[in-house]
Amino acid sequence: MARVRNLDYRGFYELLRDDLAGYRGEFEEVVLLAPDYFRLLTNLLEDARVPREARLQIAAALAYFVAPYDVEPEEVYGPLGYLDDLFVCTHVVRELRAMLPTEVLEAAWEAEFDLEATTDAVYERTKQRLGERAAGALAYVGLS
Image 1 (cartoon, rainbow, N blue to C red):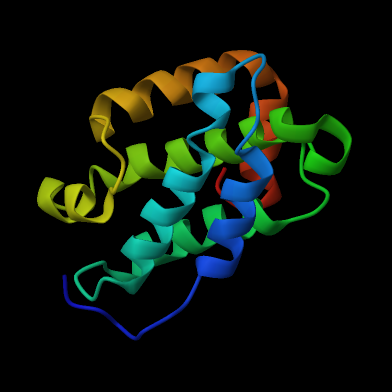
Image 2 (cartoon, rainbow, N blue to C red):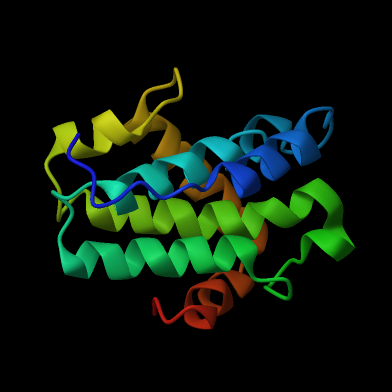
């Protein structure tokens, strides 16, 4: 993968992994994917093959990840507070399917699960969980 520059997002990625490492509870299988989606987006942001329009959506999703007062703040909801972040991420990944070749997305995905099936499942579960607040999550970072 051709890189734009050598950016280092490991600090936040490691924070996510550490924060969620021992989580066992509601939506566990979804919540534990947060670091994988963060990594996917940072990998795509570094890929020179990703066009400007796609980069803007990726940057919006990454901004949502680090925003302290989003729709479901982690500070209030604990690990379940990542569900809105995952909704925004999977929304963006679904949009990126129309903009990027499959091989670009697959090269950026480091998890062992199928990207398309996992993304669709996470999107549906998080959208259902958020209900009417899903639109607010997208609007928060200008994605609606």
